[in-house]
Length: 384
Image (tube, rainbow, N blue to C red):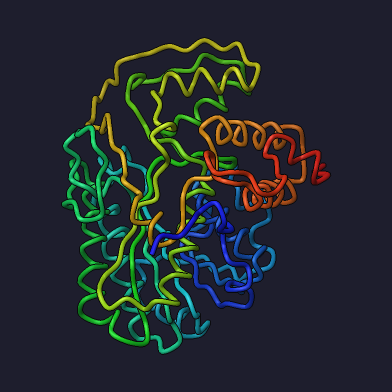
């Protein structure tokens, strides 16, 4: 049955209200956004993660720790992780914790595999031994696919792979989820699945070797931006897009209880595919910045994919999910967030305002049935 995404809200607030959610990686960029959204939905959240990976970071600026259980710990510590899950007794587990920097994986392959593969095993073992967990969703990446630089998008049935340790480790994590799903879950009480998404942007990301991080830093300090892969095409999307998909996937798994392993892609429309150089130039325009952009050769020249697209047809058909923002809106929201932070705004309120505006938005190309604008949300919500 096809669900009309134009008539569907971003998430089901009634479903999440009161749910007990164990969230790994809640101090990271995506994890912090998700923790705040879950709090807004009324969920009880236990966050389990290492300390924030950067300084500054969204976790601290938006006071994510307030209103949830915050535990600083490593998913590679199987005993501590199992004890935390046992004590909290969650209904739902969302596993986002990872070593997520591709270029760092070349320098630290053992840590990358230990975190992304055995960390996932530890999470699923804790879930397997917990009588309270109904749904577990493991978040991987679009880079889990064996990338052949093909022009057509990858589907959930395509082969796992990976040229570099990061991509390979995420392909391995997908195989772990599939094996656990077939061996222990999806046969009754509890279900496990995975979700795959790619390049995300948004306010509060200061991770190393990210275009937006380097762009914002250059604009703030009025310094030349140096980029190494100007013509690489990336499927850009705002961080709230895949997060809404993860939440919808959990709602679906809770209701349907599939009998086999499940997975979904959450990628942007093809209109959001753009070259690195074009995105950099558009962000400079939105910022009203006049910095120069210099293209240089990467001295290490480590392999990175030039083209990787996801086919999200399954998520659209089964979950009623589709992107709600254009590339222009996603870039504008990112620039607005960083400008507000630079101006000393209350970033908890500002981040909540962006989440609320996203919830009220209607996917591009779908007839608008309610008045909601993403262009002046800060004024409309009185964000200071």
